[in-house]
Image 1 (tube, rainbow, N blue to C red):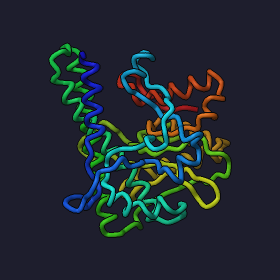
Image 2: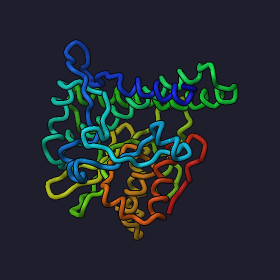
Image 3: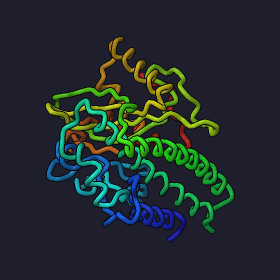
Length: 319
C-alpha cells in the first residue's frame, strides 16, 4: 500500500475510534455516536440542498487528484461535521439547550457552543498526534521525512497540551454551572446563510495586524477563542466566544474588529475571511459555491488549504 495509503488507513482508524469527551465520562456512557459539531437541525438544514452540503475533504482520492491539496466535496448532512467524540446520552443531555432552541444572549448557550468547539478540536488533535507518532516510526520514510514529521508532531503536541488546558477550564465551569466568565460577541443576520462553521483559534495577530501572543511559547498557556455560526430567533448569527481566562488576548482581538468596522470594513467580509483562513470545519451551500466565478473559488480554496499546509507561512495581515 505504501506510506501514503498506510497514513490514510491509520487516520481513518483514529477518526472512527470513538470516545466520550464529556466531563463526566465513564461507566455511565452508552453508545458512542457520530456527533455533529455543526448542529444538523438548526444549522446544516438551513443551507442544505437535497440533503447535501460542501465540506473540505482531504481523503486519499481527493489528494491524489488535486496535487495533494484538499478540495470541497459534496457531503450528506448526516455525515457533515461529525466526530465520534460523545456518547449518545451525554450528547443529548448536554447540548439540548442549543440543539433544540435558537441562540440568544444566554451565557449557558454560549458556553455549550464554545465547549463543543473545544471538544471537536481536541478529538481532531488527539488523532493527529497518534497518526504522526505512527508515521514517524514507519519503516518506509526517509530521514528527512522523519525529521519533518517529528517537527510537525512537536507542534501538534503543543497544541494538544493547550487544548487540554482550556478543556479543563471549560469542564470546571460546566460542572459548577458557572457561566459568568464566558465572554462573547455575535452578529445577527437575516440574509441567506451560505457557510456554517465551528472552530477555534490561538490568536497571534489581531484584525489590524497587531501582535497579540507568541504561539510558539510552551512556558505559558496560550489564550484561545472559539467561533461558530448559530441559529437565532430571526435568522442566524456569527459568534466569537471565549473564557475570561483568555481576556488578555481576546479582548484586544475583538476591539480591533470593532476598529475595522468603524473604519469602513464590512463585518461580513471580516468574518468570512476568518472562517476561510482560520477554520477547516465548514459546511457550504452548494448553489452558492457553484455560482462563484473561478477566481473567487480559487481564492477561497487557497485560504482554506492554507491551514492544512505545514510549509507555507500564514500571511501576517490581510486587507
